[in-house]
Length: 272
Image (cartoon, rainbow, N blue to C red; front, side, top):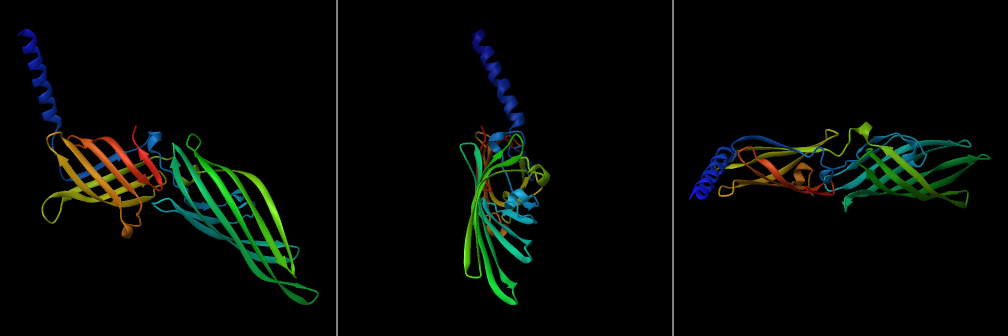
């Protein structure tokens, strides 16, 4: 009987503890931070770059953007002068960023194009330049760099002649630190009453380490029997966040998150 009494007392104490900490969340903002958890790292390689290596030593400024689904776009213009020929060379980036088995990769192409006229011996001749560079890169989380190789070819046509130059394979590395990117992020969910007077997600905002923000739509649910809150967040086309998703599962009135999963910027995430 003594053992049984001690067991009942322990159970009563446990129930009291759970009663104190448990409870349905109320209106307000709740923030979950993924800082320090490598399994939840999200990398955004968006930015304006001036490193010549990124454009295969062509120079100039160029801008790259990554959308919430991990699609990469971008471009720029480089002004070149060679043997008295001046030209504006345009280039456009396209590609994807994704994470597979814990490794975040960037597969990207850069198309080059230029057209114009060259004057020789009092005559004008049309010329054209075209090329394609392929980037095979991966993120180094420890050093916050994007490393890999570039390969490609460039073709020049002028005065009826055409020549193609194979650039071979070029080693590549660029730091993401200067753009404020270290893979960390957080999400703040604001709860409040909807038009029917029920508690709902009024706003859900993801903030990356480079200060970029993405707004998601969301649903709130609470299971009183187990004191578990679920926040199911999803990208919205009108918010520019289509393709992104997050699910947070937490306990207690403060929504102490126990599990996080989803996909941000083309990169699946899951708490360990």
